[in-house]
Image 1 (cartoon, rainbow, N blue to C red):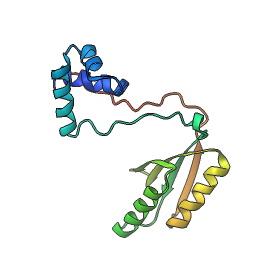
Image 2 (tube, rainbow, N blue to C red):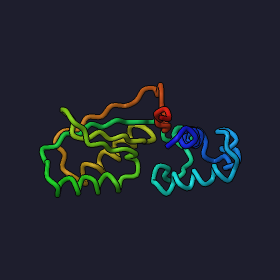
Image 3 (cartoon, one colour):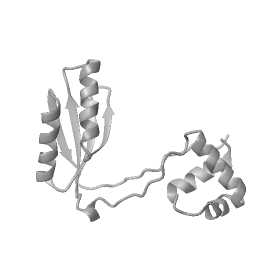
Image 4 (tube, rainbow, N blue to C red):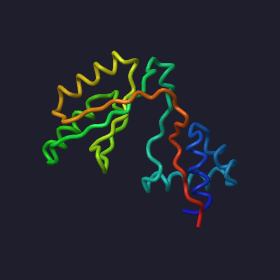
Length: 153
């Protein structure tokens, strides 16, 4: 990847709804070469699907909950069941397998505490867990989907 590719990625992370012509103008390319580079980035899997970012609070999802999970089960069968349960619960927007004292970290969006409890009940009915701890986000100081791209070589 050269500086044009990285610039295209930066621009698309800012706002991918702009036209190829607008993105090209922002990075110093005409429409056709910019389009070819975007297609190449898509074909290489560097650019994935394009989505719209929805304001959670404006759609009634005012509670962000970070849930830490510890388990005594560390086998493939349990992991497959856990992953399947996580995939079925749409309010779980992120799930990470962790190192250290915690096995998994979930990010859940919910309307409020009562709604979170409904989601929690659904989760514990789906899979046996050893220890679950929830922390409610009080304020979001930074929330971005943009990756910190390296400088061009």
